[in-house]
Image (cartoon, rainbow, N blue to C red):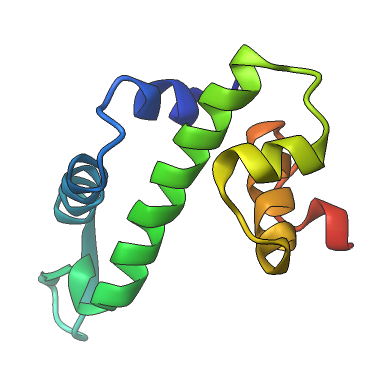
Length: 113
């Protein structure tokens, strides 16, 4: 299991908790901007990341945690059963495959490459 998934599993799976974690990470990252002078100017990363991207990252994290819990309980569960258990419609099958691949350590786009 990748290290970041172990960290995320320690937090509650509610969307609010995940959003707080993403916001904490964004506030912790410091970028510097060189203005051509001797001093560096610190800029906030949130100036470069839209609120939608922060929400999407939090939502993806929540879904990955939820799917991972199901996969831990039933490691040999076929994809169709996993899709039905998570409540994903057939139109979101590729999203589910991407989450599953990421949980298994292959990367979200592994199945489409």
